[in-house]
Image (cartoon, rainbow, N blue to C red):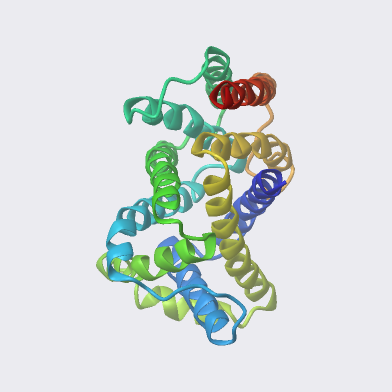
Length: 312
């Protein structure tokens, strides 16, 4: 049950966050400052949650922090490039480009010695990626910078997911604990970036000025809340499932997000190639789900046979 809840929760949070980020970036273009505020809110929420007894999260341990530092760096690079791409790419094309992540995770897992996936799993992920390419060809609002940022985000998200899966298995940390380490470790890095890029202090002054608008303030607060929810559900999904499963969930929720993206927030021209690509992508996602179900079903009898043989 935990597997299904983790995957579904991540899918819903991830889908909502794309639209929320796009909406807030249309009014406030300083993406790095936005990310810094989101991480600060996460760290403060967990800290006060510990103080008030709502969570039993342990304090920061230097050895664990050192081990999780690469996770934090890859996470923030992923989100930073993703936010940057949303400035110039419409939501359906952004999602289409991000759907290349499962293929990247599959390749990373193969070269890291995780083991060779089944033929059906491999072909289903390749079909999903093919659908992405077909859908992207029909993009009439091509933005080179936005595409480059999205593809760079795919690389960092791949490394991030694999490292999260590894750190969760090795350290036995809970989702909330990994969130705490991630937010605390990221803050010095993000503060340095907003100063180095020149966003600060103008971005902070603009943020306070726009906070006078009730609608902007509501979107900002929703962004902070959903950012925390997305982090938690992503860590949870990656820990109780595999990194590939997490990214495939992202692909499937992307079908719904893409459909909504054609009618929400504007900037999209409907084209036959987009629809064709989505159909191919959906077929790949369904195929993958069936392949994983059959693989899990076949493993259970084999495990029972091994146990019975051991007893004999």
